[in-house]
Image (cartoon, rainbow, N blue to C red; front, side, top):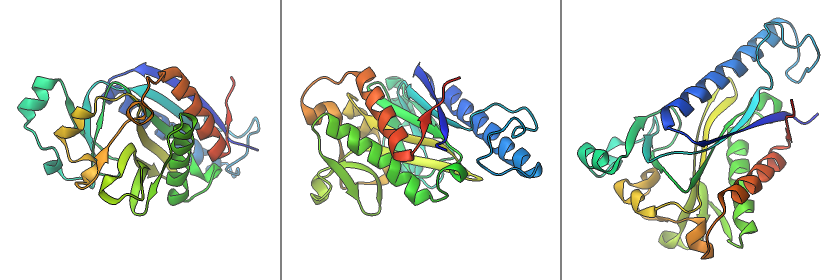
Length: 247
């Protein structure tokens, strides 16, 4: 049976409350996993008795959101990759958060579609490499829907335009995740019509020799956010082998 995933469209939302929501959903999924195991139930059991502590279901969520200007630094990142002062960030209205995902520094802001999957990989595949490749694949397919060819670069998680072009490769989607007891949080940041000048505040993802781009820049026309969101949602469900939860 395919796992059921609940979609939540948060619209425009500040970073910290969204991070808090992720933490809450992750804890609920982990608590359900522990409760099931204590009750001797299998990971994929979905009977009336599979929820011995009455915790919310499903375990899987896709949160779609567009943030105001914010920089986030992953736990393995280098704060020196923010290359302007705190005073300059304040002038520009850019928040800064040190967070618990993998990866280095990245920017979120208007025109960027951010997706936070909260997934119990015990019900998909317990392989972080596989999971990251599925996130990339969903973005690659979405870019193709707009006629933009993208791909991967070995050793550099994310999605790239002209990935074979060395220093001319341009990142269109950054990916950074956390996993606790095989439950994921954080996710992907897909530049649709993002103001790319904000990336000049940082060394994006700690990568100094390649640039960033957006879907709008690459295809040369305006991007409808709702259409891009719907396309990415469909591709994510497809590559993950999941279906939409209907309450």
